[in-house]
Length: 374
Image (cartoon, rainbow, N blue to C red; front, side, top):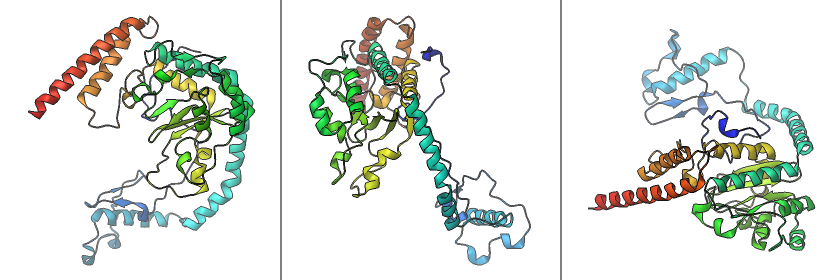
């Protein structure tokens, strides 16, 4: 594998690297009708057209009448712009757009089938096992877990319960792969501060509880009537609420990764489309997927050791990131460089300095909190 740490860093926001672009890039036509523009209370609007909403023409019909005082100037400008667009050619109705999409469906299906066939032909389980092993070893080397936290195959004590796996419905390809995967020991994989994805732990298929949960993970296990996953799918991560699905398709050799909530909160309708939303998740070649995750951590585009929700050193989601959290990010990044990451890495020195720095940051945060309460 090339030296991923030397690959140019391009900032990508969360949920990258855990969510990546699909092998298929669907294209959708954006509506440009003024009826689809969102106006706020001040009369401002947002449009994806990228065109100027003002009109320099002197057409007398373009101005507001005295009876239109309740319509904002910006809304009238958009309607006027839309009217001039109508002159340039006929606009498709929503029905016509729907008809076009239906007519295009065979092409999209053919592209999907071809992409799946290509992925299946390229799938090398040995390569995927090797990359997952490299990822775990990388994270252990960086201090996420102790170096003895990885359990390597063959798994003998305890083994993967093949009889139970068969009873649960896993395919032979899924069972064969779980026997060859490395796993993280329970002590390093059962607490939020040890997770590499927030509220999500690594699956360990020598644990019969994980073996059962892998067939019906969150949230599907809580949906009445929801069937188990397709039997050739092997979840590599087991999420809780607001966690993240990372599912390996052992038939196609792709990863399906997406939020465990899929935008849902509260009651979920008993709908087969909701039950099988994982089938419509982005498809990423498994080898490409894990290579990208390895790159993200090795290049320090994402940080281990720190709480998973803070692993982005250029965080843009949390506008009000607490000072102590930002100090942890900055200190951690500096210590990795100071201790020779990645080519002259001094792990013990790093861990000693990081523990001291983290304790000092926490102490300052507590002192500041006490001062604010006075």
